[in-house]
Length: 326
Ligand code: UDP
Ligand code: MG
Image 1 (cartoon, rainbow, N blue to C red):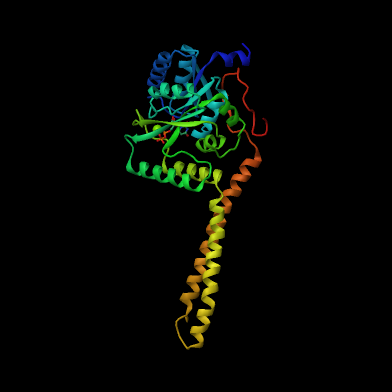
Image 2 (image 1 turned 60 degrees about the horizontal axis):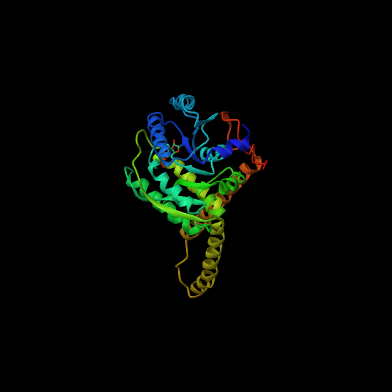
Protein backbone atom coordinates (compact mmCIF):
# COMPACT_ATOMS: atom_id res chain seq x y z
CA UNK A 1 0.00 0.00 0.00
CA UNK A 2 1.43 3.40 -0.88
CA UNK A 3 1.71 6.16 1.70
CA UNK A 4 -1.20 8.06 0.16
CA UNK A 5 -3.55 5.05 0.14
CA UNK A 6 -2.65 4.20 3.71
CA UNK A 7 -3.51 7.73 4.79
CA UNK A 8 -6.87 7.64 3.06
CA UNK A 9 -7.80 4.52 4.97
CA UNK A 10 -7.70 6.07 8.43
CA UNK A 11 -10.15 8.71 9.62
CA UNK A 12 -9.07 9.16 13.22
CA UNK A 13 -5.68 8.66 14.83
CA UNK A 14 -5.43 8.45 18.60
CA UNK A 15 -1.83 9.32 19.55
CA UNK A 16 -0.66 8.48 23.07
CA UNK A 17 2.76 9.09 24.68
CA UNK A 18 3.67 6.23 27.01
CA UNK A 19 6.36 6.22 29.68
CA UNK A 20 6.30 3.31 32.12
CA UNK A 21 2.55 2.74 32.08
CA UNK A 22 2.49 -1.05 32.07
CA UNK A 23 -0.40 -1.32 34.55
CA UNK A 24 -2.60 0.98 32.51
CA UNK A 25 -1.97 0.00 28.89
CA UNK A 26 -4.41 -2.96 28.62
CA UNK A 27 -7.22 -0.83 30.07
CA UNK A 28 -6.28 2.09 27.82
CA UNK A 29 -6.42 -0.13 24.73
CA UNK A 30 -9.74 -1.65 25.83
CA UNK A 31 -11.41 1.70 26.44
CA UNK A 32 -10.06 3.36 23.30
CA UNK A 33 -11.20 0.39 21.20
CA UNK A 34 -14.65 0.44 22.74
CA UNK A 35 -15.11 4.16 22.13
CA UNK A 36 -13.68 4.08 18.61
CA UNK A 37 -15.75 1.07 17.57
CA UNK A 38 -18.81 2.88 18.92
CA UNK A 39 -17.97 5.84 16.66
CA UNK A 40 -17.95 3.64 13.59
CA UNK A 41 -15.03 5.42 11.92
CA UNK A 42 -11.81 3.79 10.77
CA UNK A 43 -9.12 4.47 13.35
CA UNK A 44 -5.60 3.72 14.53
CA UNK A 45 -3.96 3.94 17.95
CA UNK A 46 -0.36 5.16 17.92
CA UNK A 47 1.46 4.26 21.11
CA UNK A 48 4.72 6.19 21.38
CA UNK A 49 6.95 4.37 23.84
CA UNK A 50 9.16 7.06 25.36
CA UNK A 51 11.98 4.79 26.55
CA UNK A 52 9.95 2.79 29.09
CA UNK A 53 11.84 0.40 31.33
CA UNK A 54 8.95 -1.44 32.99
CA UNK A 55 7.86 -3.78 30.19
CA UNK A 56 5.49 -1.28 28.50
CA UNK A 57 7.52 -1.71 25.30
CA UNK A 58 6.88 -5.45 25.06
CA UNK A 59 3.22 -4.92 25.93
CA UNK A 60 2.83 -2.34 23.16
CA UNK A 61 4.48 -4.64 20.62
CA UNK A 62 2.22 -7.48 21.79
CA UNK A 63 -0.91 -5.33 21.35
CA UNK A 64 0.24 -4.37 17.85
CA UNK A 65 0.63 -8.00 16.93
CA UNK A 66 -2.93 -8.80 18.02
CA UNK A 67 -4.49 -5.73 16.46
CA UNK A 68 -2.98 -4.06 13.37
CA UNK A 69 -4.79 -0.84 14.25
CA UNK A 70 -2.29 -0.42 17.11
CA UNK A 71 0.87 1.12 15.67
CA UNK A 72 3.96 1.19 17.88
CA UNK A 73 6.63 3.89 17.75
CA UNK A 74 9.46 2.82 20.03
CA UNK A 75 12.01 5.49 21.04
CA UNK A 76 15.66 4.59 21.57
CA UNK A 77 15.55 6.32 24.99
CA UNK A 78 13.44 8.70 27.04
CA UNK A 79 12.99 11.95 25.12
CA UNK A 80 10.15 13.46 27.15
CA UNK A 81 6.40 13.87 26.90
CA UNK A 82 6.33 16.80 24.46
CA UNK A 83 8.66 15.07 22.02
CA UNK A 84 6.64 11.85 22.25
CA UNK A 85 3.51 13.80 21.28
CA UNK A 86 5.43 15.18 18.31
CA UNK A 87 6.32 11.67 17.16
CA UNK A 88 2.66 10.69 17.52
CA UNK A 89 1.74 13.49 15.10
CA UNK A 90 4.60 12.62 12.74
CA UNK A 91 3.43 9.02 12.40
CA UNK A 92 -0.30 9.75 12.31
CA UNK A 93 -2.30 9.03 9.17
CA UNK A 94 -5.78 10.04 10.25
CA UNK A 95 -7.75 12.98 8.83
CA UNK A 96 -7.98 14.03 12.47
CA UNK A 97 -5.57 13.26 15.30
CA UNK A 98 -6.56 13.01 18.96
CA UNK A 99 -3.66 13.49 21.39
CA UNK A 100 -4.17 12.15 24.90
CA UNK A 101 -2.29 10.86 27.95
CA UNK A 102 -1.85 7.15 28.63
CA UNK A 103 -2.94 7.27 32.27
CA UNK A 104 -6.67 7.68 31.44
CA UNK A 105 -6.79 11.06 33.15
CA UNK A 106 -8.11 12.16 29.78
CA UNK A 107 -11.10 9.82 29.39
CA UNK A 108 -11.39 8.29 25.88
CA UNK A 109 -15.15 8.67 26.30
CA UNK A 110 -14.71 12.40 25.54
CA UNK A 111 -13.38 11.62 22.04
CA UNK A 112 -16.87 11.43 20.42
CA UNK A 113 -17.57 15.00 21.67
CA UNK A 114 -14.31 16.20 20.13
CA UNK A 115 -15.10 14.44 16.86
CA UNK A 116 -18.61 15.94 16.80
CA UNK A 117 -17.18 19.48 17.00
CA UNK A 118 -14.64 18.61 14.31
CA UNK A 119 -17.48 17.43 12.08
CA UNK A 120 -19.08 20.86 12.62
CA UNK A 121 -16.02 22.36 10.95
CA UNK A 122 -13.58 23.21 13.75
CA UNK A 123 -9.91 22.41 13.10
CA UNK A 124 -8.71 22.30 16.69
CA UNK A 125 -10.97 20.99 19.45
CA UNK A 126 -9.28 21.17 22.82
CA UNK A 127 -10.62 19.65 26.01
CA UNK A 128 -10.90 22.12 28.90
CA UNK A 129 -10.55 20.76 32.43
CA UNK A 130 -13.44 21.92 34.57
CA UNK A 131 -12.41 19.73 37.48
CA UNK A 132 -9.31 17.77 38.40
CA UNK A 133 -9.55 14.68 40.54
CA UNK A 134 -6.92 12.89 42.54
CA UNK A 135 -4.19 15.51 42.28
CA UNK A 136 -2.43 17.27 45.12
CA UNK A 137 -3.28 20.87 45.93
CA UNK A 138 0.32 21.72 45.07
CA UNK A 139 -0.05 20.34 41.54
CA UNK A 140 -3.38 22.11 41.03
CA UNK A 141 -2.04 25.38 42.42
CA UNK A 142 1.16 25.38 40.35
CA UNK A 143 -0.79 24.35 37.24
CA UNK A 144 -3.34 27.14 37.72
CA UNK A 145 -0.55 29.66 38.32
CA UNK A 146 1.31 28.44 35.24
CA UNK A 147 -1.74 28.74 32.93
CA UNK A 148 -2.42 32.27 34.13
CA UNK A 149 1.19 33.39 33.82
CA UNK A 150 1.52 31.91 30.35
CA UNK A 151 -1.76 33.49 29.30
CA UNK A 152 -0.60 36.92 30.43
CA UNK A 153 2.93 37.07 29.10
CA UNK A 154 2.55 35.35 25.73
CA UNK A 155 0.63 36.82 22.88
CA UNK A 156 -0.61 33.72 21.06
CA UNK A 157 -3.70 33.26 23.27
CA UNK A 158 -2.97 29.86 24.79
CA UNK A 159 -6.29 28.67 26.28
CA UNK A 160 -6.42 28.32 30.07
CA UNK A 161 -6.81 25.04 31.97
CA UNK A 162 -6.16 23.08 28.83
CA UNK A 163 -3.69 20.23 28.64
CA UNK A 164 -2.51 18.35 25.62
CA UNK A 165 -5.80 16.44 25.27
CA UNK A 166 -7.20 17.69 21.97
CA UNK A 167 -8.24 16.87 18.44
CA UNK A 168 -6.31 18.33 15.51
CA UNK A 169 -7.37 18.40 11.90
CA UNK A 170 -4.90 17.03 9.31
CA UNK A 171 -4.28 20.59 8.04
CA UNK A 172 -3.11 21.68 11.49
CA UNK A 173 -1.03 18.53 11.95
CA UNK A 174 0.80 19.21 8.69
CA UNK A 175 1.72 22.72 9.85
CA UNK A 176 2.88 21.40 13.24
CA UNK A 177 5.04 18.78 11.50
CA UNK A 178 6.99 21.60 9.91
CA UNK A 179 7.70 23.28 13.25
CA UNK A 180 10.77 21.38 14.40
CA UNK A 181 11.85 23.39 17.42
CA UNK A 182 13.54 21.33 20.13
CA UNK A 183 12.22 22.98 23.26
CA UNK A 184 8.60 22.65 22.48
CA UNK A 185 5.35 23.48 24.10
CA UNK A 186 2.77 21.83 21.83
CA UNK A 187 -0.18 23.71 23.36
CA UNK A 188 1.44 27.01 22.49
CA UNK A 189 2.39 25.80 19.03
CA UNK A 190 -1.21 24.78 18.31
CA UNK A 191 -2.44 28.19 19.47
CA UNK A 192 0.19 29.84 17.26
CA UNK A 193 -1.00 27.94 14.16
CA UNK A 194 -4.49 29.46 14.40
CA UNK A 195 -7.43 28.04 12.37
CA UNK A 196 -10.85 27.61 13.91
CA UNK A 197 -10.44 26.48 17.51
CA UNK A 198 -13.02 25.56 20.10
CA UNK A 199 -13.03 24.13 23.64
CA UNK A 200 -15.06 21.25 25.04
CA UNK A 201 -15.37 21.00 28.86
CA UNK A 202 -14.56 17.74 30.61
CA UNK A 203 -13.75 16.42 34.05
CA UNK A 204 -10.15 15.35 34.43
CA UNK A 205 -10.09 12.00 36.20
CA UNK A 206 -7.52 10.69 38.63
CA UNK A 207 -4.60 8.66 37.30
CA UNK A 208 -5.72 5.02 36.97
CA UNK A 209 -2.53 3.55 38.42
CA UNK A 210 1.14 4.31 38.85
CA UNK A 211 2.71 7.66 39.64
CA UNK A 212 2.92 10.98 37.90
CA UNK A 213 5.92 11.24 35.59
CA UNK A 214 5.92 14.98 36.05
CA UNK A 215 7.80 15.83 39.21
CA UNK A 216 8.23 19.52 40.02
CA UNK A 217 11.58 19.60 38.22
CA UNK A 218 10.02 18.60 34.89
CA UNK A 219 7.07 20.94 35.35
CA UNK A 220 9.51 23.77 35.95
CA UNK A 221 11.43 22.94 32.74
CA UNK A 222 8.19 22.79 30.78
CA UNK A 223 7.18 26.17 32.17
CA UNK A 224 10.55 27.62 31.12
CA UNK A 225 10.19 26.13 27.63
CA UNK A 226 6.70 27.55 27.34
CA UNK A 227 7.76 31.02 28.46
CA UNK A 228 10.98 31.26 26.46
CA UNK A 229 9.34 29.67 23.43
CA UNK A 230 6.54 32.20 23.22
CA UNK A 231 7.69 35.38 24.91
CA UNK A 232 10.60 37.81 25.19
CA UNK A 233 9.18 39.18 28.41
CA UNK A 234 11.96 37.75 30.64
CA UNK A 235 14.56 39.46 28.47
CA UNK A 236 12.70 42.74 28.80
CA UNK A 237 12.69 42.39 32.58
CA UNK A 238 16.44 43.10 32.50
CA UNK A 239 15.77 46.33 30.62
CA UNK A 240 13.03 47.38 33.04
CA UNK A 241 15.22 46.59 36.04
CA UNK A 242 18.04 48.60 34.47
CA UNK A 243 15.83 51.63 33.98
CA UNK A 244 14.46 51.26 37.50
CA UNK A 245 17.92 51.09 39.15
CA UNK A 246 19.31 53.90 37.02
CA UNK A 247 16.23 56.03 37.79
CA UNK A 248 16.46 55.48 41.54
CA UNK A 249 20.17 56.29 41.64
CA UNK A 250 19.73 59.39 39.50
CA UNK A 251 17.16 60.66 41.98
CA UNK A 252 19.32 59.63 44.94
CA UNK A 253 22.45 61.54 43.83
CA UNK A 254 21.15 65.11 44.42
CA UNK A 255 19.43 63.99 47.63
CA UNK A 256 22.66 62.57 49.04
CA UNK A 257 24.65 65.65 48.00
CA UNK A 258 22.10 67.95 49.60
CA UNK A 259 22.08 65.92 52.82
CA UNK A 260 25.87 65.91 52.96
CA UNK A 261 26.08 69.70 52.48
CA UNK A 262 23.53 70.11 55.26
CA UNK A 263 25.87 68.15 57.54
CA UNK A 264 23.77 64.96 57.83
CA UNK A 265 25.44 61.66 58.77
CA UNK A 266 22.69 59.55 57.12
CA UNK A 267 24.71 57.94 54.35
CA UNK A 268 27.95 57.31 56.15
CA UNK A 269 29.37 53.86 56.52
CA UNK A 270 30.02 50.67 54.62
CA UNK A 271 26.57 49.08 54.99
CA UNK A 272 24.95 51.43 52.48
CA UNK A 273 27.67 50.82 49.91
CA UNK A 274 27.56 47.08 50.48
CA UNK A 275 23.78 46.86 50.03
CA UNK A 276 23.92 48.89 46.84
CA UNK A 277 26.73 46.76 45.39
CA UNK A 278 25.09 43.46 46.32
CA UNK A 279 21.72 44.54 44.98
CA UNK A 280 23.15 45.57 41.64
CA UNK A 281 25.29 42.43 41.50
CA UNK A 282 22.18 40.31 42.10
CA UNK A 283 20.19 42.08 39.41
CA UNK A 284 23.04 41.63 36.95
CA UNK A 285 23.47 37.93 37.69
CA UNK A 286 19.74 37.28 37.31
CA UNK A 287 19.69 39.14 34.01
CA UNK A 288 22.71 37.17 32.85
CA UNK A 289 20.93 33.93 33.80
CA UNK A 290 17.86 34.91 31.80
CA UNK A 291 19.98 35.71 28.77
CA UNK A 292 21.72 32.36 29.34
CA UNK A 293 18.39 30.49 29.19
CA UNK A 294 17.74 31.93 25.76
CA UNK A 295 21.30 31.38 24.52
CA UNK A 296 21.26 27.73 25.65
CA UNK A 297 18.06 27.15 23.72
CA UNK A 298 19.46 28.96 20.72
CA UNK A 299 22.50 26.67 20.83
CA UNK A 300 20.31 23.56 20.99
CA UNK A 301 18.30 24.71 17.98
CA UNK A 302 21.40 25.55 15.95
CA UNK A 303 22.84 22.06 16.42
CA UNK A 304 19.88 20.82 14.41
CA UNK A 305 19.86 17.30 15.79
CA UNK A 306 16.83 15.12 15.13
CA UNK A 307 14.14 15.60 17.76
CA UNK A 308 14.03 11.91 18.64
CA UNK A 309 15.55 8.60 17.64
CA UNK A 310 13.31 5.60 16.97
CA UNK A 311 14.26 1.99 17.50
CA UNK A 312 11.19 0.65 15.80
CA UNK A 313 8.36 2.38 13.97
CA UNK A 314 5.92 1.95 11.08
CA UNK A 315 7.65 2.51 7.75
CA UNK A 316 4.65 3.62 5.70
CA UNK A 317 4.57 7.29 6.68
CA UNK A 318 6.55 10.21 5.32
CA UNK A 319 7.74 11.97 8.44
CA UNK A 320 10.17 14.87 8.72
CA UNK A 321 13.66 13.41 9.09
CA UNK A 322 15.46 16.19 10.91
CA UNK A 323 14.84 19.77 11.91
CA UNK A 324 16.54 20.94 8.76
CA UNK A 325 14.46 18.92 6.31
CA UNK A 326 10.99 20.02 5.44
N1 UDP B 1 5.15 10.75 29.56
C1 UDP B 1 6.05 10.51 28.54
N2 UDP B 1 7.39 10.80 28.75
C2 UDP B 1 7.84 11.33 29.92
C3 UDP B 1 6.90 11.60 30.95
C4 UDP B 1 5.55 11.31 30.73
O1 UDP B 1 5.70 10.05 27.46
O2 UDP B 1 9.05 11.55 30.05
C5 UDP B 1 3.71 10.43 29.32
C6 UDP B 1 3.04 9.60 30.39
O3 UDP B 1 3.19 8.22 30.15
C7 UDP B 1 1.60 10.04 30.27
C8 UDP B 1 1.71 11.50 29.85
O4 UDP B 1 3.03 11.65 29.33
O5 UDP B 1 0.93 9.34 29.24
C9 UDP B 1 1.46 12.46 31.00
O6 UDP B 1 2.28 12.15 32.11
P1 UDP B 1 1.72 12.17 33.59
O7 UDP B 1 0.36 11.55 33.65
O8 UDP B 1 2.76 11.53 34.46
O9 UDP B 1 1.64 13.71 33.88
P2 UDP B 1 0.53 14.46 34.78
O10 UDP B 1 -0.81 14.03 34.28
O11 UDP B 1 0.79 14.04 36.18
O12 UDP B 1 0.82 15.92 34.52
MG1 MG C 1 -1.40 12.15 34.19
